[in-house]
Length: 323
Image (cartoon, rainbow, N blue to C red; front, side):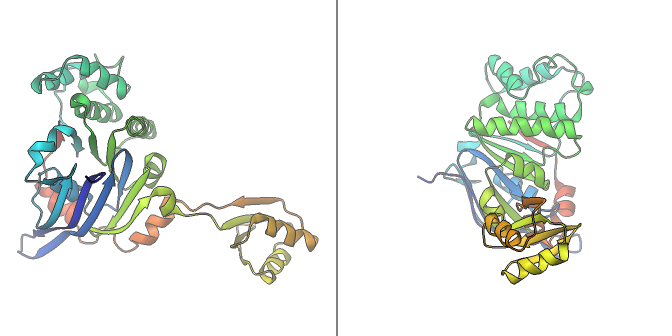
């Protein structure tokens, strides 16, 4: 049996514009999400993330290709696995005059879950103590955490979150980030769709980057980022230092009154080369690549490539919370 929770092969979605012209939202996408931890689904706005999620959940029909959840073909076997899945797709809806607890109790009783599950869900998303406040008084971050709590009522094995921090202030983003991180640590497989690079890098174990509906890269976040081979070097005489390091085989450039050295050698070699020439370091700092630089390099020119996800799909989309 496959250890992948989500699999797609050659997945494709084509829309028709009002003028009858085809627009490709998802292009032959191969997606593989392993069990456990947090997997980032990363791409610019309009790159096909929401469309892919809606197809996985049976909310949109794939044009071609195949999809599997927990090893079961979907949408044909979606009823067999939907009880193991929680998802928040776009903005959730709750009764504004009810408290957070009342909203969750209504949902839990509708699916036959025990009331104790409400307490567990509220504790997981850190809403205990604010659960008796009316929903209309919740901040955006609290509303998103309540939406996640709603998906936890049936104790899902897979949680799908589509841009959960959109519109949130820094405090709200931190709250959601901590919630996602804790869920992944507890063994829930989380698919986190986002275009916010810092969010993905801080909470995700692995990631898939897409652009124009096509997969550009996938793997462990640390492997996507790679190992640093650049260093920021501070010396008193920049010009002389640059010449010495270049003569020793390093690639050097000046940047903000410092030297940036790209090298396959260890930092010890940089120190020794300069010291032997009578130049001494005031600073030597490794410059670790980040997910943002990888993302921008891969997706250059793909932002809002055809507008399908941001335009055609959103026009037809409805707010969905899968419980």
